[in-house]
Amino acid sequence: MVTPSENTPAKFYATTPIYYVNAKPHLGHAYTTIISDALARWHRLIGDDVHFLTGTDEHGLKIQQAADAAGLAPQAFADSIAPLFAEAWAKLNISHDDFIRTTEQRHRVGVQKLLQACYDNGDIELDTYSGLYCVACEAYFTEDDLVEGNCPIHKKPVEHVEEENYFFRLSRYGDRLLQWYRDHPNSIVPDYRMNEVIGFIKQGLLDFSISRNSFSWGIELPWDSKHIAYVWFDALANYITAIGYGTDDEMFNSHWPVDYHLIGKDIIRFHCVYWPAMLMSAGLEPPKGWAVGGWLLVGGEKMSKTTGNVVNPLDLVDDIGLDGFRYYVLAETPYGADGDFTYEGLIGRYNSDLANNLGNLLSRVSTVVGKKCNGMSPAPQSDSPLALPAAEAVRETMARWADVQPSRALEATWQLIRATNAYLENNEPWKAEPGPALDAVMGDALEALRIVCILASPAIPETAQTIWERIGMPGQITDQRLPLAVAWGGYPGGIAIDKGEPLFPRRKLTEN
Ligand code: MSP
Image (cartoon, rainbow, N blue to C red):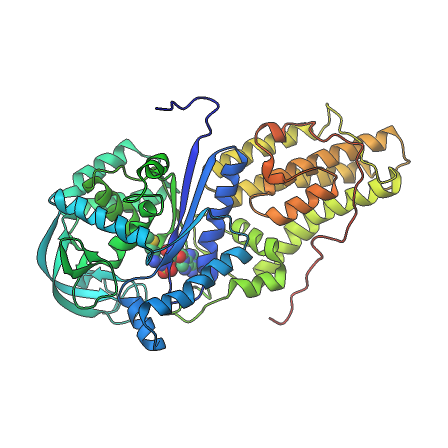
């Protein structure tokens, strides 16, 4: 057995929800995926052995109905939509290591193994379900859950269903879950979401149906092929089937338990109550962590096909640029809270943080070095006044990424940009004569920019690499490792600076 040592990188396994293939990728999907991507990139930067998973949720009644409406068989329908997610993630520079589709064989094998393990443990039993169901949520509701007789999320009528189902005995897990959360008080971030989960468990847990027999688009139960697995039982299992549960024990053991499931607040009960109970039943460890995000609202409503207020993220990329869009998603809203997407907000954030701060710093530095240092960069001073703000920015940025608070991490990184712009304004190198004093200021600014590039790279990977190259740094920024790479003094100086085109030209609000 290998014992972890100081030289063995920590493993970091993170997941996005898997997205239903009834709708094309929209801004809401992009939101959670970009946050997860930046977190995965951050962990690569600090040297962790990262595995980052995303994918698509392809079974269940909702997909079957969407396929029927499109006049396609469910598999053909899923095959037509799943690649749109893969393409969107490629365009958004998402660095996932794996993309699972729940119609894959590896998933089927793993889901059946999980079902069998819970069944063998005596937690799955046949019963009759009679109650309410929302197909858009793929969730069961009680009368009390409804708002004016409708689904509280989709505001649409629910269906009455009555069928013989297999039930998972969730009611047996209340005490075990409460004890587990007492033992792992920091497992849900932001911490206020933990109260919601505990409150829900304390209300008393009801058994839930884990099979359906009135339609066939799903994975058969291994002991009763008349039934297919309930889509949420199937979907949650993706987090283990993708890493080899049922097909590759070694891989599974090296990744599980997951470090963070990144999810939206709408699916917290499934992830923080049902899922750990299912895992306990199967003799597996619960996740180490959940990072629960709010909704990105459009006109005050959650974006969804059902609500009809869908914004295509790729249109925004065409408009504001890839990193302009990624930065907005990461910086605008504290993770956990709801955010309101507005076009004005997108442009405003771009102009203030990217054009006026980062872009301006780069253009000032490259212009002055071009004009007054013959285009060759000076080296930083070891006792630079910027060394302290740089160290503070590094410390704070690291702490905020560790809390899964990208907006605060970026705010900390941007403090160093502001400090460097202020340092230039105080010293006015554009007015100074060439010479050692000017060189010292410019070397310091270049070093600060080098550190900013590394710290900002998980959020704006493409731009960070471009700036890296313009200031003459060799290789890939993704090969840099914290904390060594961001220690003050790493910029060598004596290299040619490439002025290039402005990276973030200011934008005007158009009539969009
Ligand atoms: N397939 C299930 C998840 C199964 S995970 C085992 C599902 N899919 S979904 O496509 O409807 O949405 C998945 C997630 O996308 C949401 O829970 C949320 O994380 C994210 N978002 C979808 N719309 C969103 C917003 N408008 N805002 C922020 N996140 C949103 O539920």
